[in-house]
Figure 1 (cartoon, rainbow, N blue to C red):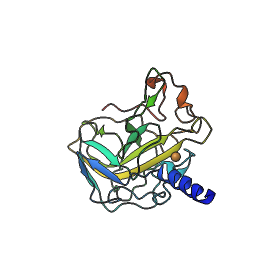
Figure 2 (cartoon, rainbow, N blue to C red):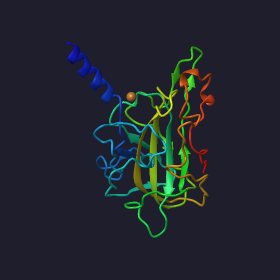
Figure 3 (cartoon, rainbow, N blue to C red):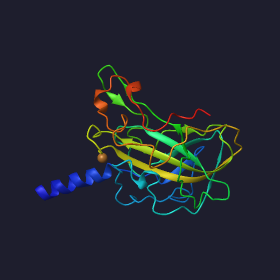
Length: 231
Ligand SMILES: [Cu+2]
């Protein structure tokens, strides 16, 4: 009986984690898992990354994808999750423009090239009960690709940070994917601030090593990384 209980608890813990294998643009998902989204190293284990300074924090990928998805500027995007996103924490999206002469199918996303287009904050009610956008759904929250984003090929990086144990050092869990996209019909915006991965995050950033259960209000949370580019 003890053995069975251990098995059940282990299974429940594994089920609690997730990958984001499919990008959805204006309601239409990529054809199949990992066709424009780069397959991640945790495809089987579903394990998050606990140290945000490692190389895997950029895309966590072990291979590039075959395709590139067209994304009209101004599109609404989200990701399908393999499991329920049951842990509390923010969802963030970043973009990085592929340098001229290179392709989203092969570019590695290195350098200070990433800008943030979306983040989320919790709501905290008067009983200090906390809810995060997208929590307990099988998708990540919707975001808009700013209409003024210049046209061209990009990597799109989606991230969910699980903060339930994050009051201890290196116990936040990062779940993420990168997709290969081409933004069409874009504008003349100047995206920024630009950051690199790894580099943008430190283990003790106030949004990474944090006791979320002591937040008095949602706006007290400080999402890691640069300010959101408003377009
Ligand atoms: Cu977990």
